[in-house]
Length: 210
Image (tube, rainbow, N blue to C red; front, side):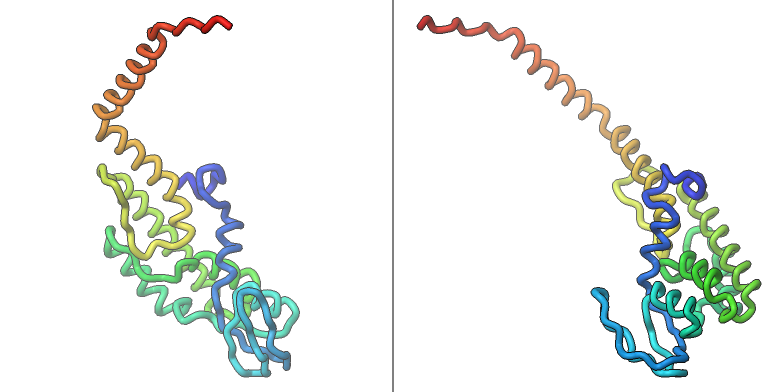
């Protein structure tokens, strides 16, 4: 879809969507002792070697870069699970399988910073990309048969997918609204024009002599 390449069509840039996804919690296995870390978003730790703990993705990436931890990939990123999701996505053209809201961004960050912690990383990457492509194609198909309505409801759509289709849906709803109510718009414009003419034709009151 156009929003994948044109930053002016999507509401947020891919970098902004990825930034928001960095608050998602992931599981790491520390290899060092560290006291609890206190942030505005919450407290994380204490960190004990070989004891798994959950932290925001941005913190996990920072610790990984310093060699302070390894990642535990989320369960949904297993080859078996992704294969089942891909098959289910291909079977149904009207429904979307449940995945984390930021599954694309989480997977990308893990591939970039923790690929050595992902079993079967090449297969996992391929499956995630296939799932993304199938879902985007389904969105295009479903929106192509869009009918006039006041709302659109699609379950299990991810952050990236919402970001791409939201501008199109908004413009489509505005167009349908204008198409459904042309007479009301004409009447309103007519009344406004008539009121303006009456105001212009109204005789002016003479100024009072001082």
